[in-house]
Length: 306
Image (cartoon, rainbow, N blue to C red; front, side):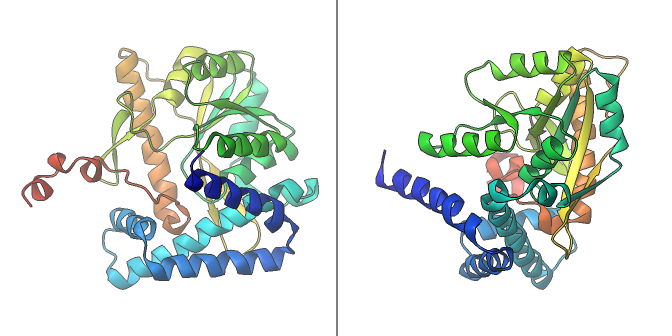
């Protein structure tokens, strides 16, 4: 393990061991202070966040984008402060920490017994939403985690999420899809963060007017297992309680081959995500490149000519 890997792993370990011991008001203040410091330094992550917000809010001028990126960093650090503290939250604190709207889409889907796929973008605190499912609804679920480096950091995240009641599968290795399909055929629940896929297997969709690639997994799982596919978006307001919405189900098209159906369903998923992100852009934590024009300047004639 390199020194950088050791440092990264140590910092996350310090967060889980120390921040969770802080009183909640102190953790909130700490997170906001770190967010404001990072925002003022305007590193690559902040600049990318602001550039992404420029696509979400195309009529925003420089002052408005600066306000959004500052709010976005505060939201992002709120996610981390909450996540570091989640293992120490009581069941009651978890149950009262999230208020999802239109929950009947999920509860009806679970009751039907055919399995449910929940697909989310990187908004607010998806770990809190997961802890709420296992606590308030007493419904276990399966998810997938990207293999992080160093390996010890990945192990920390797996242990953290398993401690919240989740079954966590590694993204790599090729077995995750089959296991997810089996869970769904048994009537289980699967949760996937699903607005970014840079692999060759990603499905190209339009997102805020331009092309991105999203994972095909949610749509393929719904097609192959008969499970219900539900988009979910999350956001914060001025209270300690996170808000969320379960969007209407995305139906499997009646015509077309598998690739065509997957494309239609993934575009519908992207549209649902865009609705939630447009309403609460500051709670979308996308500090990385997403649009294909940003990943490949050759796709953008203006950039290619510069």
